Length: 145
Length: 133
Image (cartoon, rainbow over all chains, first blue to last red):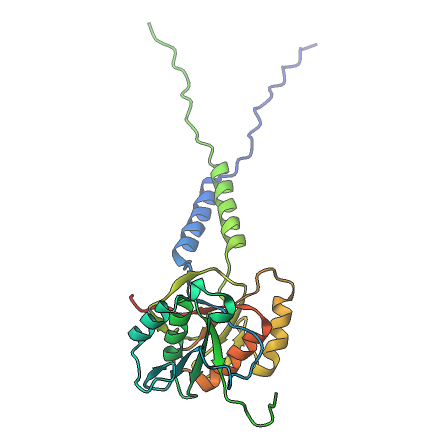
C-alpha cells in the first residue's frame, strides 16, 4: 500500500480591515467641528433689582434719583441736565459699596420713549458704582396700594 | 559564497487606536457643546462702557427689535412669563436670568419685563456690548 502523502496545511489568511481611512474621517470631522464652532462669551452687567413695590412719594429725600428723558439726563431733580460722564463721577462719589443695602438704592425714572441703549448706559453706570436700581413708575389707574 | 536572503519585515504602525481616540474626541465635543437657543433671533445689544464678563446662565429672556418676548428661544407672552420663569427657575440652584433687549426698544415696552423679572427674585445678567470695541 502506497503511503498517503502528508496533508499540507495552508497558512490561514487573517482578515484585516484597513483602519487608516477610519481615523482620517474622524480627524476630518474634528477639524470641521473646530472650524465651525463659535464660542460665546457673555458680557454685560449684573443687576440687583429689588422685588416688590413701594410708595416713594414721601421717601425721595436723601435717595439718589436719576431722570432719563429721550435727550437728557437729570441727577437728583436738578434743573440742569448732566452728561453721562458727570453722572458716572457723581455716582462713584456716592461710594455705595461702603453703605448698607437699604442706602444703596438709586431711583431711576424714565420717559416711555427712552431707547433701551440710553437706559442701559445709566443702569450700567449705577450697577458699576454699586447702586441698587429701583425703577420709578407712576401709579396707574386702578392700581391702588 | 552566496548569502541567504532574509525576508524583509515591513514596519507597520497600528492605526486603529488613532481612530478610537479621534472618535472619542468627537463624542466629547458633541456631549459638552451647548447650542445657542436664540440663534434665530436678531438682537442688537446696547452698548455701555461699564461692561463685565458674565457667567453663563441657563435661563434666557430676549426682547427683539419689535418688542416680542422670547423665553429660552421660544415666543412667550408677558402675562405667561412670570409663571414660565417660575417653572424654569424652580429646581435650579443658579437663579440667574440672562436678559437680552434690543437697543432700539422703548422703555414703555421693556419696563413691564424688568418689573416681572424683579418679581421672580432672580438675579439678572443684562447683556450688552462693550463700547470701547
